Image (cartoon, rainbow, N blue to C red):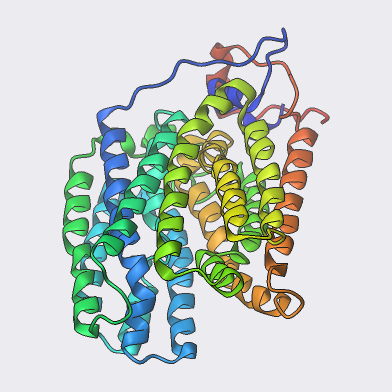
Length: 451
């Protein structure tokens, strides 16, 4: 057995689709504790705010007269800030305190809303972007998500049930935030001042999140007594230790997946549908609202499959066909067919989100969870700015070429993940150690077995 798989034997069972006797792995659906409810609520509040402001951000930059180069620099700074802030949280979050770090993030979010609403100049916007408190996505993978994943892992690191509810609430709240812009009738003809002041919505979002953070119990923190004996306590609580190798491998795989996703961002899909099928902005708004709703349902159903088939099988088994559907969108003859393919793809593509988060939390020690979440989240954002650039080049061949390339790259990620997991014995039944062996395994790594 690999050493990094011995820290939580109960959670490790959920990596395997079958027990040695041939019975499927099943587990009781865990209920949410008070801390988990607070974390999920924090995610929902933040996603609603980001869903509202992400729609407005591009229009606001255009209304202020920023050039395309300046807009690109701001958006790149937002992505870079998300990655840098996640790494900073991974390095210092546990030492400073998860609850305190979480509250400080929301305070920073409120401050960022005030700065943007006040009509800050270009260089100030860049500084704010680099703090990681703003997001170009409805559901972010930034510093707050890093902390939330680590805090939720305390009660469920193996079934993905808690992560399923967590992501479902985020997607649903983000969809409502986006819909609020549509229902308000806001568009590119609104005045810049109105657009700017709408970012004040982040103030109550930040205040609410900070209050939720103060109500979390000490149970979400790393216990000093759990520090690994393989490293000094202070180092183990802020850096990756014995799980460093596997986390880096996962981070590399997730980066490949994110690079493929960067080719087909929401902005690209909007441009593609408008250019090929000449649909209106209102139609696109409702389309992406529907996509967000489907995403919420998808991530809520993912834990059911994970408990039945295991984390790896659920990730690859749903993600691979979704990428084939993504490539097929490029060949749709009508907008209606393209929409059906996109929604079918969305039904499957998001099921790997809660299972991916559960996988990362399962294969590391408890004291490494914050750092592991930070590294894997940051790896996804680090490569994202490359995607739009490559998409623009590939489109010189054909308008829908990025869809095909993205599907191929992401399918390659799925096949590689499956092969890696199979090499480590995670895709077939292997012996599961009895629960009483977990404590000893968590302290002393066992010799590696042959794959």
